[in-house]
Image (cartoon, rainbow, N blue to C red; front, side, top):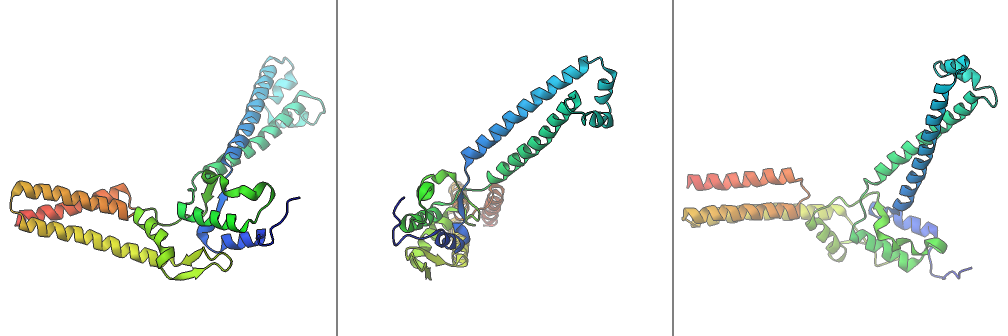
Length: 272
């Protein structure tokens, strides 16, 4: 039996750590095993399908009137299936297998489809998760290297910010924003996500307004028409790039905002 380190944490401590913040709810998805389970169920379905086809072919060549009637009337089929060893009894067993396996197969398909919609945890969250795990060593046995398969982890509550600015500010927040340290692992720091969201909003609004203001001032000072058109193209591109970097807006939203910015600049030039 492996020796237990005096300073190692238990399953309970690991559970408390995961529950301490929604972002830490990251777990193995076992994608390979899930796919293997579906493959096995699929093979069972193929086997049942082949057996049913063989049974239907046998029924088609059967000259027995009662057996033919059983292929057309469920009540007769169910009644004859009660006779042990009959063709109908064997087919009823096959139908029951079909129903059970089909239900299991479709449920597995739906569950895998739902699991695949989860995203992987971002690097910051997984660094915290892995750092705590390596430091506290809560598992022995097969779970001792749990974080080793990074790509197989999913986040049940992923970070709300998907844009580059938010991710970078979240990385810096642990160093500069006020917060509290984890009681056992002081390297882990908790801070308010609202502070990061507000900071992102302020920076985004200021950056967007500064781009437009700089464009207006430049267009006011430049009187060459060709140069003005070039300036409109440049500032519109900068505005679009800033939105792409600092927001998680959809492409259509960014295109609409960029078109509105270009329209404002063109209108300004036309009135000048």
